[in-house]
Length: 296
Length: 296
Image 1 (cartoon, rainbow over the protein chains, first blue to last red):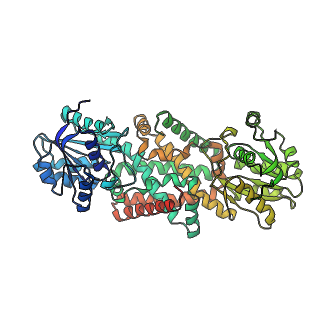
Image 2 (cartoon, each protein chain N blue to C red; image 1 turned 180 degrees about the vertical axis):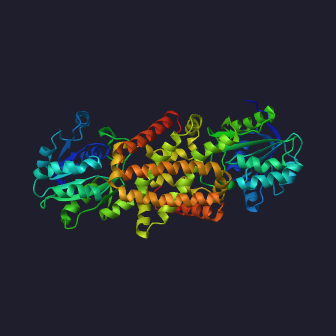
Image 3 (tube, rainbow over the protein chains, first blue to last red; image 1 turned 135 degrees about the vertical axis):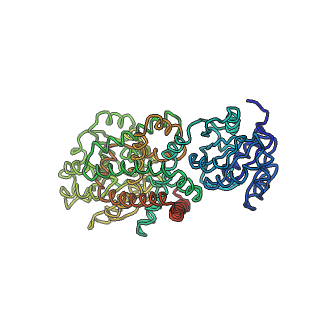
């Protein structure tokens, strides 16, 4: 791996969990960029980033920072990526790279496309890493180690620019894979968005129970319920944006899931033992595959 | 805590994960019974229990063992508890205690009641502990430590007999609580049975996807899907029995959950941001309650 920095100046707009972790990684390896700029509209977040010392410059002026950068990374919530891109694209340097870290890709590309310029490479990316915490203080240098970062480059994007964003994530410790934005959104709908939706929902279902039963859900949560709540502690705004911006894929996966759950309900109602056992056997097989795949 | 053994002879029928763990605990504390008998119809399981040395006697003859015991614990799958109870109750010693470890209680009580004798106390219990493993080798002495064991005694059961089963579980390291069988089944439907049903279902939904996407579910499982699979590795026969024997409560909780999931789907389709954020906020509140309750 070359130790030459990938960029002269890298600007991260939105140094929250993901953005601050990229800055931590950049500081640690020293090979992402010679100069790091962090941009946030929230004064408290700017102050924290300055105190953490993970950027050479901290500013509220996205346009000014972008005009001086070889690479701009948008780490704002998915719903804000389009507006921020439209604001900074007109002033970006010719030949610079625009990238993002949004959890959905089709809607992000649709939102950014109208403002795109032919002399700027837009390379959408999605680092599949996170914790239930948010904000600059949630960031840490090893967040991306051995995690995936999925890239969904547009047709015609120069290979050398794609290579730079691949290197950026690899230097953060991540593994990378390229796929179409449509495929990305479908895969993420089943591996991430649907599990989160179900986790949020079962917590709500439990919260609606009569008081006595609800308090016992907390007492006896270790019996399975607890496993569903870790991911249910995630950031509400971020997840609202994800559900709304990956609407079609999320609703399709949820519809498939609901059909399967209804089939299970019917099997329980009519004592269809074979069906029930078959579904559980298939679940075990998937769990075994995960263990062989070293994902657990 | 008295060090006097609770019983002269304790028979555990079905020394699997739960039954073998009770025997391990009994061996370790030495205060459950002076003599431990393990009964299993599976010769391979009997051989393993003998090799593990966790019983003084291992036999296939449930009636003979029960006729010589002060306490008989049924740790067979829920669907087998009624038939085994009917087989042994006629030969049990007057004044002996019959107990079980089934995960559902209303159906177990319904199944055992026809064969009950007035001179035998039947004290249904449910230790809320387990792993995804099964069989005698899955058992270990600390399985019940700081876990709950729920007792659902029938009206008119002598307090001293209930006290003995409370002591049995406390000597295994568990905390105990008494409740009605109906309430037990409702609480377990939401904290345990529904989460398992959803976990089995989402694994099946993923397994039905096109080959390419399915393989990527395994690659990217860390993004949330993985959390749902730990409990999906559980024993198929045991879970089939649980779903079928707690049918009404499971179907009711699933129906409530499905209504809530449909409401979430509708909010996503119609971009009802407030509804989505409100549901996620409630989930976070439940997660916080669990942390305060030290369940995570």
